Structure formats: C-alpha cells, structure tokens
Length: 262
Picture 1: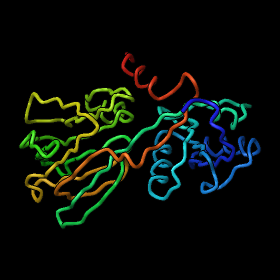
Picture 2: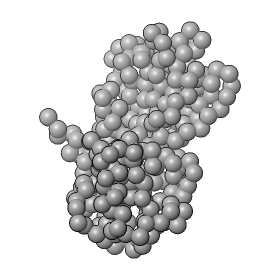
Picture 3: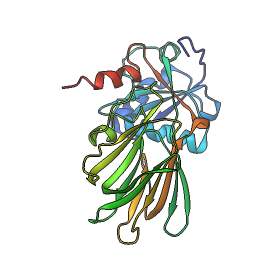
Picture 4: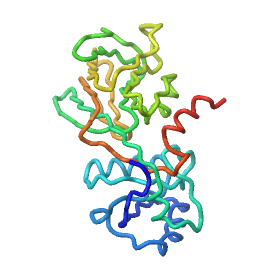
C-alpha cells in the first residue's frame, strides 16, 4: 500500500512507562480514540518490546490491524519518531505500510504436550542447563545436521534479522528477500558451520538429542516452552501483519542502514 490510506478510527495502545503515559496525555485530545475492535489502525506508544507485545496481542486475540509505533522507549527500531503538534491521523494516513509474516512454532515437550506460538523476530532453541544442547536439524524433511552441539540455534525473519540473530553473528536480511536466517548460537560442533540462509517457504525441524540429560527450551519472541522434544518452524502466511512508517524512515531502509553501522 502507498500513502493516503483513508484511516478514520484509531485505537491507542500505551506502554506503562512514564514517557509513554506522558505522551498519551499529550495525544489524548488530538483524536477521538476508539476501542481496538472498532478501529481501522492502532497507535502503539512505547519501545520495540511493547510493539512486539501489541502485535502478539493482535495475533492471539484479534483484530489484526495496521500498527503505527511511536518510539517512547530506547532503540525504537520498529517505531517512528515522536513529533509534537503533528495531527496524528494525517500523519498515519501519509505513512508507508510494510507487510511482515511471522514464524509459526509448533513445539512438542518431552511429556507430549503440544504448543503453537508465533514469532515476529525469531524462534530460538536454548540449552536450559550447563550442559550443551545437542540438536538434529532438518530442512524440508531432510536431515542436514545430525548433531549440532552448542548453546542453541535460532530461525530469524528479515524483520528480526537485526535483533538476536545479528548478536549471534547471523546475516542481516533485506525485508523483501523472502529468506530466513538459520543461525547457530555458540556452536561447538560442527566447528565451521556458521549457519544457513533459507527460502522462506522452507519448513525447519529441530529434534533434541539426549533431552533428559540436555534439556532445551524453545522461545518464540517472548514466549518460552521448556523441556522440548522437537520443534517445527515455518512462515505463518495466514497471519500477515502490517507496520506503518513515516516516509523515508521505513523498516526496510533501517535494515539496509544497519549494515553500515560502524
């Protein structure tokens, strides 16, 4: 979508930080805010963590609305700058929209419990104790690594490739690349394996070797499932989210710019 969206009804989601609450007071009289179930779009006041919280709440409970974030946190990678005195509805209707599809994680615990969660940034598998994790890695039903030994592994979307994935020395992916990053976390074996870049149509499966001795947790963004036996990850194309950005400050430009930070 381009600009001039034609939004009329906006909902306001507010982080509990002092800065976000103060900004909400400033915006309160600038628009006739409505509840989420009556809105065309939602304005999220907070940081990147609160933006993820707002997006996950829409995925879990609905409705799924275009989301315009205003940075009242620290980094604000997913957010827009706050400017006093700007008419919020006009600003949002001039914004550029970016569609992102989350990952769907299906985890089975050692006790046979099934858990399904979505991740906008990444799904990560992490050792729970001092013992290294041992994981079998399959892509599209073909075993690619019989035993990955280390602290864990993660699958990142392009939107999440500059987050935990980058800290683990994974690649930064352009937003429109239709790729996923498969990145090891402190791998001990295979020593020279630094990860893989996969098409986003790929289905990825992890099986925990020696799960009783080497327990592993699976984390979809902020949601954790402990003592897993196996995890499957793929793109959730039926749950596309729309983020709204000011012209010239969109997420795809920030992902490109991040590669030149020194």
